[in-house]
Length: 486
Image 1 (cartoon, rainbow, N blue to C red):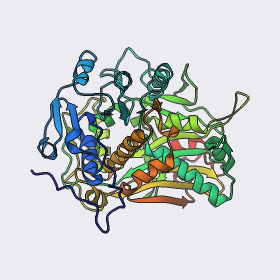
Image 2 (tube, one colour; image 1 turned 60 degrees about the vertical axis):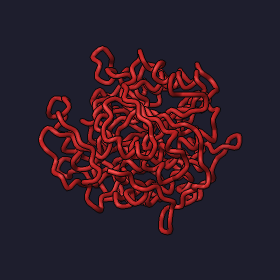
Image 3 (cartoon, rainbow, N blue to C red; image 1 turned 135 degrees about the horizontal axis):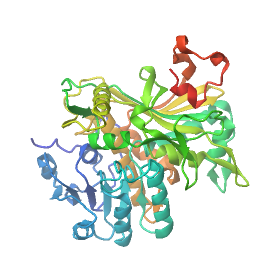
Image 4 (cartoon, rainbow, N blue to C red; image 1 turned 45 degrees about the vertical axis):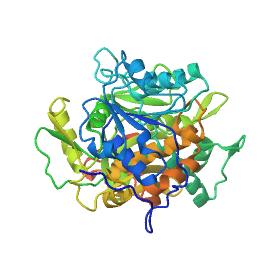
């Protein structure tokens, strides 16, 4: 199949800046749905020379349209033993490594990039294969908290140098910039002065002044396939391997100072900043009540994500070392219906993966939406959701090889790449350390409808009255126990 023609933006398209073309070589690790989606976005953005894109991945299939663009492929799995040799023949000073793989160590790739003066970006802190399901590791050691702690240690070791942007897809990634936009808008609505320290906004103090108690990364995907899911098949709108990996990690959340009860199976980590806790349960098995604009109240899975650890750290307020304020923060994910069926089948099989997997793309019917945003709760206006509402129809119009979910992630990848090129000597950087206004300026054309919605919803509204505890109606609705109650 020939590739879609590269086109310049036309009337009715999102406003994209195609005046600048970067000469940097992009070396992608992995050739899954998000790499394909990002290449599709690059074809639309017209900011990179496609002949200077190299993709390294094992078992490459369906590469012909991308070869026609000028993309070079290397069919090779990266391992601890061959990483230096394979990349050493490809990556030169000033090149950009984009890690969109699973089971390839982010830490080792960052070490390589640093030593070879190359830039780097990933969407998730990945370990080598065998970490997520190792029986030799504790739940804490398999957590995203642990992976992030290792990256922070590496950052301190390497110091300044080539920029390495970690965890910058949609979420984690753009969601941290959505958060800053949401806090700014809520401050304007409530006429709360924005506090600054040394010229920068103090986001933790602002969140505390707004009395934000709980933040959900609240996502609901309503995209549907015309092809019915088969038994023994895992269907998703993005990486099946990525979803399976995080679904089996322990549920993790930033733990708020307003919380009065301790969750069942919850534990503190015995190292690091102690800004998050984990449950001794896989995230896909923990259901939480949440709310999004496309459908209102729903149940989501408390899947672990890096932003549930990095955002609480951004918003923590201490007085002379003593903890004063932190909101509860976690992901609440309602995937598409086929993915829900798939994850239910997966867990029912004893957490053994299905024999077949399929990523929905061309067979998705018109009208489906992925709504991804931050739901900030507990303030004077009750709850405020801010984020991206993107339909599959919009995604297809904006960039080839995309559905609504993949384009939100690709927008995070693309904006992170541009930001790193513009800020090339920052060392290891998390989304919270980036200029959110600049990142949003780059990503906005690819995100559909972007904005905020107020709601009067609380988790007490969707509880089963037949099982409600005495006094629940008068309870603080923003306690974690109410989000997990029947």
